[in-house]
Image (cartoon, rainbow, N blue to C red; front, top):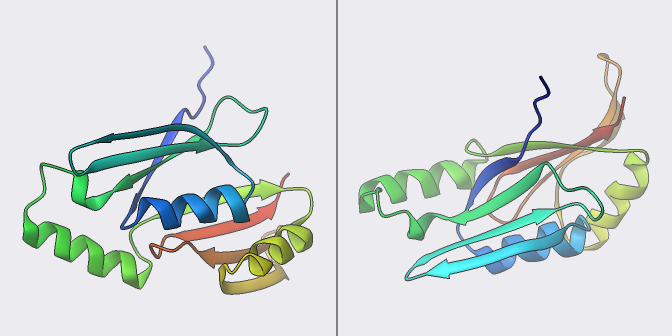
Length: 136
């Protein structure tokens, strides 16, 4: 029996800013852009790869959250402790330069880690942490 990742959800405060980061800086493509009332979610994935998509869901669109919950989540997002995703590439240095040139907020420049990968880190516009490391 095989198992694979289909979706990963990241909460964002501004879908357009998030889309710009994931599409333009990281090179992902839009798979879906759905809205209803205040709710909006955008699904992005890597060109030519059908699994492992990221859903960018706006906080305002969740009808199950109170105003207090939304405020608390927004504060945690701003601290960078809500969402986290790790992406793999064959060229960490090249991807770092691409994302930095696109205005990505650098958290860590490329470095060789003691656990065997070379990686770097950014924050997306909502504060989610995006780590990029070598595939392997």
